[in-house]
Amino acid sequence: MEFVLYEVKDAVGVITINREKALNALNSQVLDELNATLDAVDLDAVRCLILTGAGEKSFVAGADIGEMSTLTKAEGEAFGKKGNDVFLKLEKFPIPVIAAVNGFALGGGCEISMSCDIRICSDNAMFGQPEVGLGITPGFGGTQRLARLVGAGMAKQLIYTARNIKAAEAYRIGLVNQVVSAELNEAGEVVKSAKDALMDAAFKMAAGIAVQAPIAVRNCKKAINEGLQVSIDEGVAIEEKLFGDCFETEDQKAGMGNFLKKKDDPTKVKVVTFVNK
Ligand code: DAK
Image (cartoon, rainbow, N blue to C red; front, side):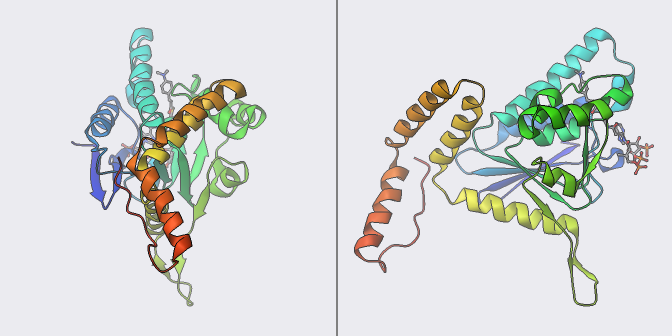
């Protein structure tokens, strides 16, 4: 693939949008390659994904304005559908996806990060939905997902004013879970860049997810995502069903068995290796 890299380390898959010259802007080819990469993830081996952008400066600076500028109405709809299909695939992806936001996350960049389960960012990150300044509405789910994440009032303010916000503000309004800075030594020299520190933090979080019972984690994702679309009564019914399903897994028996063994003899078993069954 030309614009998307994929590597697996332990049980964590890292997808890197690799179009640094255009600040990782999303053109049709990037979207197609992302789609194919997601289809190829080995769900037996990988328990968490990290999505990031190549380089230090930009996660994704939006949909490709050059490509969009000449679209007809029909082509615009087709481009929107291509993006939305990938974004929905990410959102509904069976395992958790962490967006490691290294720099600009504007327009489609902010939107793709919001399709992920969790966002962590470097302190040079910048989020925004600048579309109304380009004469369009956010087209990859921004009006829907931003309002769900930060509330309608804050989402409307950001979208109507097209104002970009820095990492600290994104953290304050709940758009990101964590902000990561470069590591400095006592002399104030950078010993670990913000990007490296961000990737370390993303791996640490991903590893913390990857050691948990994988089917239980997947069911939690499903319960939260599906529950948010329905009434509380329906949401609780979804949760009940997914909770019940866990009792058909080996991992439930191993997890609870381990706890009970530890109670009998704390020296006996400390770590469960879940088998994803
Ligand atoms: N598209 C294409 N190229 C981009 C780009 C983008 N979004 N953002 C940056 N680039 C390219 C620049 O053109 C430049 O290329 P060269 O000139 O070197 O060939 C290169 O990346 C470096 O950018 P700059 O020279 O501008 O770098 P600066 O540091 O000066 O500025 C910046 C960085 C991020 C502030 C600036 O590049 C910028 O403002 N970029 C545009 C950000 C933006 O407005 N993003 C939102 C795009 S709109 C829909 C589907 C999707 C969408 C809407 C509807 N439907 C079809 C339903 C989504 C829309 C969007 O995402």
